[in-house]
Image (tube, rainbow, N blue to C red; front, side, top):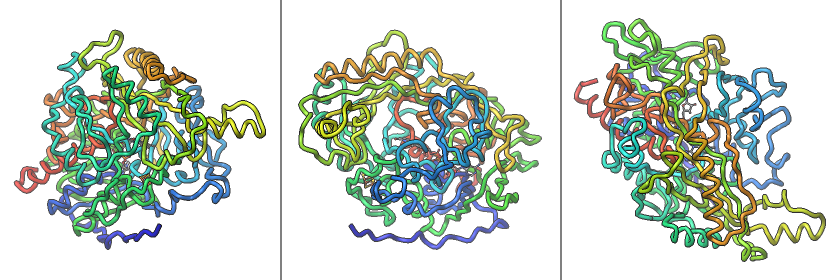
Length: 597
Ligand SMILES: Cc1cc2nc3c(=O)[nH]c(=O)nc-3n(C[C@H](O)[C@H](O)[C@H](O)COP(=O)(O)OP(=O)(O)OC[C@H]3O[C@@H](n4cnc5c(N)ncnc54)[C@H](O)[C@@H]3O)c2cc1C
Ligand code: SF4
């Protein structure tokens, strides 16, 4: 396959003597979207990214075979990924006293760790403290979007109006009708693959070609339909038909490589922020990018109380610089954004900028995961091999609890991500008994016959789950670290009990032999869907941002990532992060032009 690669357009020279129209902190899904929308509105934008720009295609090497790699994809000796038990038995900071040279989050322990060693942060340089937490961070241009799992889902009014539905927490200051046009824009601009299902609780996107379900998945889909539940092909933030307006991306060739390793697509069919948003924004001539720039304070004009720019440390030379701008947009990811707001203490804002409510860092929420089920589809044993993993995902079973019915024991809901069929390596081989010819025969016969799914459930946003700054511990650049005060509550635990029971029930109803039921809850943070530390709301006393992700306290300060989410829903957040950012930045640009900021 020959692919034409285009170079990113000529980068604009960084000029720190200039006052930019806007400075954006962070270049992931949120910051990339802010850069795209603001530059397309003609604003001059400086994008500060803490990490470096790496030759990502060479890093991911999506089609490299295991036998073409000296360690079959494993990272060099001396690198270590934190294991489940380490997260639970020890206390953070997990890496400080480690004998290993480099320590990575648990994602570094997935097969193919060599492909993410320059993407994930080295935990030794980035300590955090407090309660146990598996924090996955990617510090480079594009952030976590370089390796994200691609499941791209919309939220519905069951999520935006959760309090109205069951009385808990707060409603969002928007409803589905407000964000729907922006979900549409994101779909059309970036491309999304999926199948229409007409569900009120999981609105459809403007889909490109869906992935095909395997025979086992079709079997489960048919059975679930009789239970009034749905199994739909993985809604992937991947362009399966291509996006003609974007020269940096290719359409998906169904190589399945994004699922074989920790993630990433070296032809950029899967959305990533650099090729999907940032390079096109650079082509407008309105975007200037400075990598290796770690924002550590939002600066304030002492006369007006407005934000006047960002103070940042150069990651390489450790010197401090100032970027001046008329509007400041924070998009460093949920936890890093909260950290930056808390770090930005001044005479006007002694508790951190935008924090007159005291809610910055609080109401943290995410997804709880762990419970799941594995089954054997007997009629698939011995079936001829098929190219089942040549697609960017398996299937999704949307939430079915607490919609029309009320579930005893817990509120809100969960969905299942799953898959079945043949893959590059038959994982069942590890548990297959025997040896020699009989073992090989058994592995071959059973290779495509397994199906499994794991749940992602809503963690309730509670004020008492929060992060603050550690008074002593600092990162490698001398910036105070985050301290976690967070644990799952009773609702999450009860929900998890139901996940494994419901998973088993659904497989049994479909005539699938249940061979494993996982009841264990994974460590807090495992979902990598952190949300809610600077929530939106109508009341400045109980929220940080208004419905346009604009600070209640400082009108030229916006926080456009998942920190603004009022509740976690159980759907994966990235598509919502981008739709919201698009909406807010359009509003921002209008207000800017009117001179209101
Ligand atoms: C393995 C994996 C699988 C995932 N699967 C899914 C999925 O299937 N579906 C889904 O919806 N989501 C998924 N996610 C989550 C998804 O990646 C995030 O929701 C999304 O990337 C959030 O975008 P963001 O811009 O807020 O943060 P990020 O993408 O993390 O970007 C933040 C950027 O800000 C930079 N930054 C941080 N601090 C500073 C600072 N002080 N100064 C300057 N820059 C800074 C970082 O370096 C980074 O580049 C997954 C994530 C991972 C890692
Ligand atoms: S399956 Fe599609 S999205 Fe995934 S790596 Fe292959 S081309 Fe990229």
